[in-house]
Amino acid sequence: MTEILTLSAAQMDAALPDLTSLLHTCVQAGANISFVLPFSPEDAAAFWSEKVRPGVARGTRVLLVARHNGAITGTVQLDIDTPPNQPHRGDVCKLMVHPEARRQGTARALMLVLEAEACRLGRTLLTLDTRTGDKAEPLYAGLGYQTVGIIPNFALNTARDGLHGTTIMYKAL
Ligand SMILES: CC(C)(COP(=O)(O)OP(=O)(O)OC[C@H]1O[C@@H](n2cnc3c(N)ncnc32)[C@H](O)[C@@H]1OP(=O)(O)O)[C@@H](O)C(=O)NCCC(=O)NCCS
Image 1: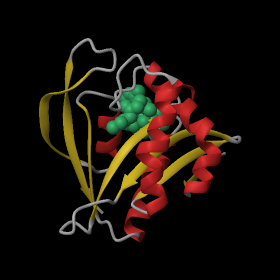
Image 2 (image 1 turned 30 degrees about the horizontal axis):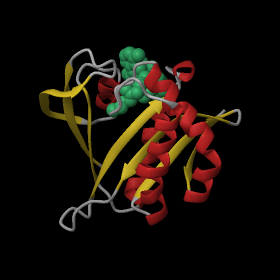
Image 3 (image 1 turned 45 degrees about the vertical axis):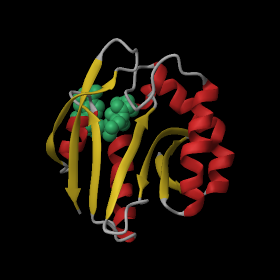
């Protein structure tokens, strides 16, 4: 059975090898989640330690993981480090599921727990962006996220072989 857990900074430290491996594997498999190739395990570890852990320790970032038979198979984050005039908003970031664990409902389960956690924290407007045309777009649409529009040529493809658009989406909880 897959369980969804919120990690504290200390739990994140213990899970760092698993998180590093998950991110590295997903990017190597072509996930468009801000990184480009070459992407080393050290790059992946630095992302968790330098970009995610400080927010988790401060309480401005919620880190969720999916665990199946003891292994971390997916993750997503809720960034609530919003400006003073947006205390009701949160950003959904870095949803990823291990390639071997996909199409089993893990991403959907992560998102449902993220939304429950957002509500608990008083964050009733969720925003995100996702690579236009990627698999995550129908996932978010199926969860009720509305499309605002597309920004063309927003980012480099992971393989650096061209630019892609990003789709901006939101959901009022
Ligand atoms: C996008 C991603 C997170 C989906 O994870 P997942 O656990 O396989 O998704 P789920 O099994 O929960 O799928 C839920 C729904 O999303 C949609 N979906 C997911 N994968 C899909 C695919 N390959 N093709 C079409 N629709 C898909 C479907 O509607 C699916 O429902 P269904 O299986 O009942 O048809 C995963 O493919 C991934 O990690 N991709 C690389 C990273 C990435 O792109 N992250 C998004 C960042 S914004």
